[in-house]
Length: 253
Ligand code: PGA
Image 1 (cartoon, protein in one colour):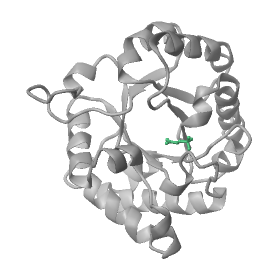
Image 2: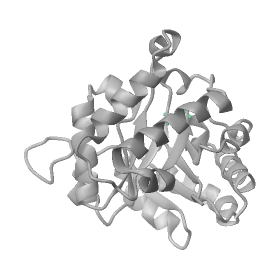
Image 3: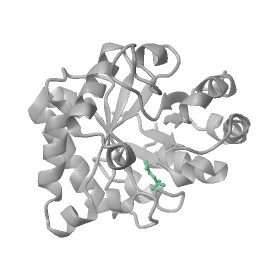
Image 4: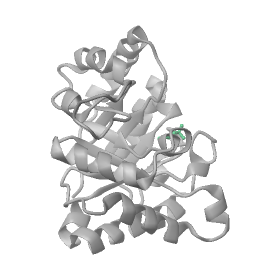
């Protein structure tokens, strides 16, 4: 049985003070829920503040991005070596990184290898744009993305894959539970082809894109969906707690 994972991607939001306040506001609600792994990914600058704020809880921390080299002349970047021991997870290949910072699958692949080398758990994001969906190319695109992103990466036990259709991110127009479940199943089958059935069985596949407290239950009830990657709604304490509660209800321990 895979433990559900609800991950918060705070993106570029919040000062240091606000990061601490937000976590403290969520703590009573989150600490009362069991059977769900909760991951918060604040801006990297705030990770040490977040570490203090989550002390004594089961909340895991992650960053939203990192570079693939350990050190060197890479102005502005954070390396896996710096993050090791500071957080557990790293989001890799988010569509905003791909779109605004021109990260291609070769870069995503190097980041996955680097995360694995340093024992950081990657949350790999894949997802089609609206144009691909409308042309009926979703499956082909997702499989192509996965094959390139995972090329040469040895089975990573801690890997999480998030299916995030680009057209659903931040738009208030989520996929349907059934449509998301279909693609999450495809992701699992592709991982089975790459790393074998056992790795695929243990893999957690998340859905992301306009998840809210009101619709989380629909996604979490799907057999292939093991959790959610939440953007906007994860900045609202009551809303985020409601999503984690929905996960606990969908997969009673
Ligand atoms: P959203 O973002 O929940 O605001 O749609 C999801 C994400 O980008 O991970």
